[in-house]
Length: 323
Image 1 (cartoon, rainbow, N blue to C red):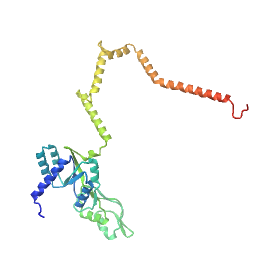
Image 2: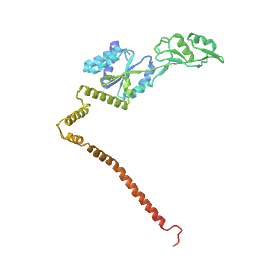
Image 3: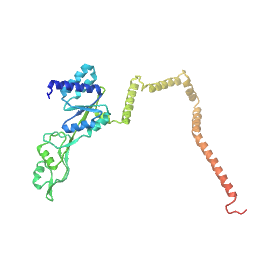
Image 4: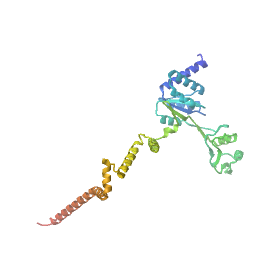
């Protein structure tokens, strides 16, 4: 079988990537640092059905994206270019972005601390028996880890922060963790960015619930309303408040002058005769208490009826009365 040349491989890759861009509108940009081929194969199997994982060199991916944009006029796909940095891959999907992201996160595997590797997390060795014989204490002494000999084995006394996040793993730290059988790191595909129909956003957006979205939307409307009212700029959100404020201003002018309009007449009547406020308040109280009074009257009628029934029963024949 004749092997394909580099030029033929590039053409085939361009064709495949362009077909995927045509077919899928949702893309997850994932970091693939320290991800092995077997692990990547398992991820492909887990996503099979509605998602496709495509890896490749950044230069090839950028080239294919530009070619697709030129051939189809799809300029929105160019938003992917700034995201293709580092060791990244693309996951094309038709499924729910959050569910696909959660599925990808399941395929993380533990890994040992190798020399020269940058630690993605803090590594803390917990106190306890290590199972190592006393001749291995030199490792602990080099790393300033307090130990004691207990029943013929080395025991760590206190928790020790062996490696800090962002630091490179040294040879002593790697050797000690290997002897203790600790695999402190875990690696897998990590979603860095999300592309959806030309829009690019952070994967944290996928974790937002509907309640949080409604809250943020309401907060945004409130800010728009406040700004519109402050600068007297009409917007749909501020319109009701502007109408109410305008009505209040017109009412204030009518009360202070001889100018009037139907809605202001009632207010002026109340201001001329303050006793009408008392009458109106009493009417409102009566309406509010009317239901309670009716209920009380009904209860009294029911109570009287029960008393009458009891009297009739007492005056009647008993169970052992003789005729």
